[in-house]
Length: 523
Image 1 (cartoon, rainbow, N blue to C red):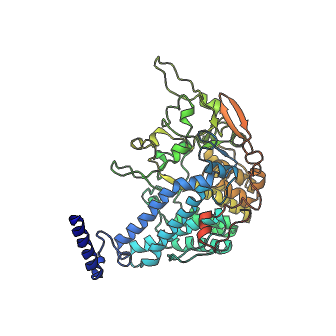
Image 2 (cartoon, rainbow, N blue to C red):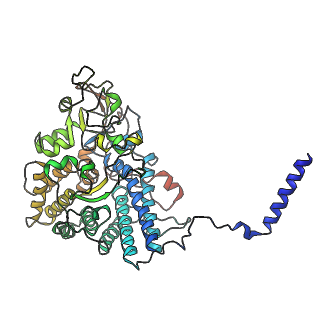
Image 3 (cartoon, rainbow, N blue to C red):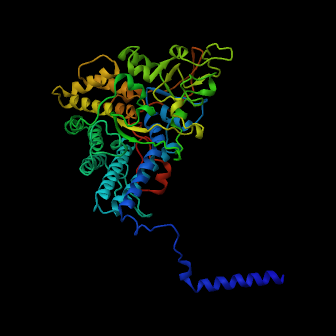
C-alpha cells in the first residue's frame, strides 16, 4: 500500500505541475506542416495536386459502379441473390436514401472538391507550376460537381473550404451547369496542350484539350448544343487525338491501350516494380464468375466475380446494328455459343477442356462481357487480383466525336457532324448511317457500352421510362444453355419511375446533419 500511495502522489504532483505550465502542452508535431506554412512552393503545389489525382484514381471503382448499374444493357450479377444487394438496388431501381453505396459515392465526390478547394483557396498562381496545379484543381472541382449534378440534380455548389458549422443548401441546376461550363473554359486557358496525338506524357495529366472536351460534354448535357458544337470542334480541329485502328480496338481497356492517341482523360498507373498498387477490384468484380464454372478462358485471370452481365436485348440489338462480326462487337460481348468456342486449355491427357457452368450464373442470360473482362495480363498477381495495372480510363476520343455528332444533329450540321459519326462507325466495322439523333443514340449505346454514359443519356433524351420501366421484375439465372427466371421483385417497388428515378436520393446520413439539404422527389 505504501508503494501505491507514493506512485499516486508523484502522478498528482506531475499533473499539478503541467497544469501550471500550459506551454509544455503546445508540442510541435514532428514531420507535420501547418496549413498556413504549406501551399507556398512549387513542391507544395505538386504534392497537393498529386493528392487530387490519387483521389480520382481511387474514385474510379465507385464511379464505374454507380454510373453504369442503372442501365438497360446489363444485369447486376454476383454469386447469388443478395450478394452486394446495394448494387442490385441501383440496377433494378430499388434505391433509397439509406442505400449504403450512394453515401460513399456522394461523399467521395465532395472529398475531391475539398482537396481541390484547399489548393485553389490557399495557393497563389505566381509560378508556372502553381498556375498549372490550380488549373488542374479547378478542372477536377468542376468535374466532381458535374458528376454530382448528373446524378443528384441540385447538390450544393462548394467553392470554399467550409467550417464545421456550415450547412450548404441545394444549388439550382442552371447555376451548377453555368459554374461547371465556365470553370472548364477558364481552366483550359492555363493548361498545356498535347504536343501531338502521340504525346503520351501529356495525357498522364489534364490538358487544355481535355478541359475543352469536358466543357463540350457539359454543354451537351445541359442542352446548349450550339455552344457544344463550337467547343468540341476546337478539340477535333486540334489534331491532338485520333481513334486507334480497328484491329487495336480490343486493347483500349488493357495495358496495351494505355496512353494511346484515343485517351482524353485517364489516371495513369506506372508499373515500376516498387510502387504499391491501390486497392481497386473493378475488373475482379466485373469479370466472369469464376467459381461457378469449371474454367475460364486461358487469356483471363483465374478469379473474378461476375457483377456485370450483358442482357439478351443488348446483344441482339448490337448484332442487328453492327452485324455479328464487327471489330467492336467482338471486343465487347460474346454469346454462350461463342464462349464455347474459346480456348480453355487442355486437360492432363492433352485434350481440349470444354467450358461448363457448374453452378447457375446469377443475373445472367447467357451473354458475357469482354470489354471489362479480367484479362490475365492486367492483373496484379502479387495482390491476388485485387488491383490491376492498366490505366483508369475516364474519357476517350470516340465519346468526343459522338458528343459533337449529337450537337450537330440538334443544332444543325455542315457535314462535320456526319463525318464524326461515320468515323466512329467505320473504325468499329459497323455500317455508315446518315446523321440523325436516333443514329447517334444507337451509336452511343454500343460504342460507349459500360463507359458511364447510358443512364444519363436515357434520362436527358426522355427515353428512360420506356427503356427502364419494370426493370427488372424477374432476374435470370443461366446454366448450360438454359435461362431460368426468378420473380424476385414481384410485388416490390422496382423499375424506373418517372418523376423519381431520374436522380439518386441524397444520402440519409447527409440529410441528418444538414437540415438545409432538400431530398429529391419520390424519396
